[in-house]
Length: 332
Image (cartoon, rainbow, N blue to C red; front, side, top):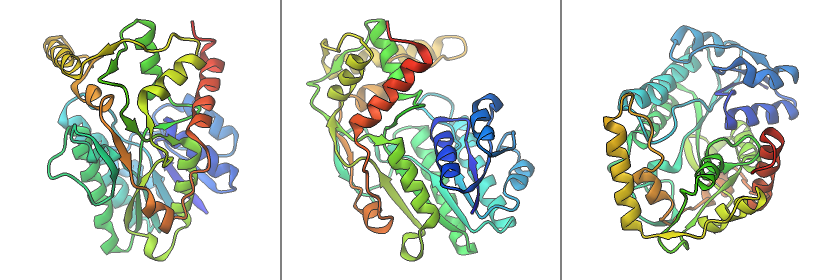
């Protein structure tokens, strides 16, 4: 099978492209940074550089491929609506249109469970529990991008959307690096009582889910799937496990949720007034995420995709820590 992986210069896209090559698939990759995909090219991937906002480029990318795994997109919770609209919705529209014009058989779309988040605690969220209003631009545009993908089914495109939660492992530059930096600066505190449980996903488990999505048939198609390790853990236990592995002091200071939320609101207001509107180190959404229970029901993926999260969260964390030390040296 010949596939295209978008966003291959990023963490998830890059790790899946490598995994697909190891499985014997023919892989074309796209990304913004050529240096970030050199390891994939050495392993046999075909690289075509360019911006997915260019419809003609996307049309060329989809030439002569059987399936597309669309991992590219705008991430985060800070920024202008139009930037998220461009990075998530417009780019996905370009991918869908190119798939249809180039007669690509299947599109596997990487979405996000952030669409469910409303600032409150939720346990065992099912795929249909989408709120009427979204909490931020990222969530709103990720859901809208999903709708663009599912709308293509009436034109014959086979589609699956995956919503993986807190993906980590070697190559993760999003979750723990930011927390480690804050802890080094002594700016990290446990929000609330520190007992809230959340889901994490090993990148290896997500790779298996994406491969299953490429091979799925029948009733498995045309659906969105929650993906996680299925073993919710207190988020601060996980954070402090990483801190110990990286030889950083554990987070022991507590801060009330109300105080943390107010401080984040002030920080956001200051950043809005600052030239260039830099991303705040503290955000209201961040305080909510670190204080709320947020777990997913993965039974649909287990049933239709035969998804079995065999790699534990702790193994994924060890993988991340080992990779980070190799890349950046021992934490100090």
